[in-house]
Length: 206
Image (cartoon, one colour):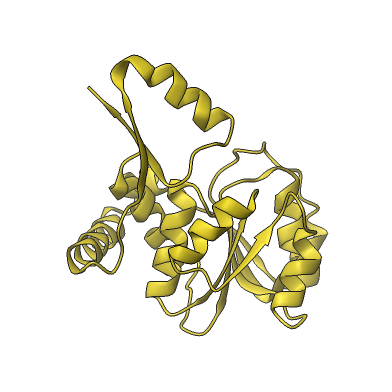
């Protein structure tokens, strides 16, 4: 997964689909992966207060290094109650869900009134979300498909790509490569991804 894909997804999601504003609170699920860390960095660059959620304290320490203001270890803490606590009971203005599964509903229950729930991916499985929550929260559930955006709205996709390039050149964002694998260990790299051992990006070197 290239830097352009991860950061393109994050910027397209947060700016063009989630309308994230300076001072708002962003909750990122799966925050230690490539797409999640990109959202942490982009969220901070856009002026948001970022809450990173991931499965281990070690992954969350990395999220803090990359700019997260607060963290939630959702394998040890209740995601909904902790997110509400960290937002003074108000909830997150924008949820960036790169995980899905059972975490999706918990995060939706912790969204603010008129919040935006961004559907990014399903590494923990495709969730079944009770749609009455969208009514009760007055919120939007927004699908984010960066790849398809380049066909369906090429002008916006190109603008987002240019913004990402500018941020990379200025050093405002910086991809993290946590490990390099020789080509012979490509199966191990895939297994580490499946087993959720990967943080940031990994590279297979020919």
